[in-house]
Image (cartoon, rainbow, N blue to C red; front, side):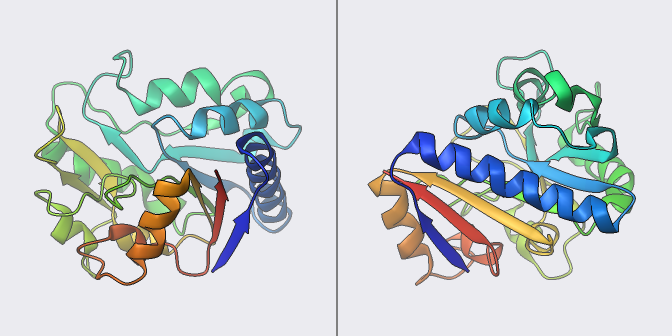
Length: 223
């Protein structure tokens, strides 16, 4: 695992966007397509903005989420809505987007269908992750209903998770699916997140899910 310190957040955003673009280009030189898994939340938006105008073969890039809040895509809390408005614009509008949400179904009911749709996309070519102060990543929340199953070695590709302190159920890529990505990037900002990440290295995956999925990856940090 590599830990990259950046002078400030703007520099981190530029460096992460460049690193991911380079990984996608490298993959496309060797494969017919590249799968690119991305999170929601506040951190990735500026990275998406920086990447959307980059000139690569976006029509050969398959974009998916690392996890999704179980709300329609036009809902304010939808991760898909963020990706469509910030990443899949400009040149990147040519990319294929694989949606997770299934109208009229629960997260538990939809998980096997989403897993079937993603079967040809793994191992993930390039993975972008964020991390909460509680050391969760994607929707692998410590102690949440469904997290233990999603963290197991034989977990299915996609799992439903219900965090007690969140307003909706989630659907998430499992820990084995995330950790199996070919190129992994974790972006964290602030001293509190750095301290949380360092603490995660001393805890079990059940207590700190991020520790189960970042082996061999690159951590990008700025204050």
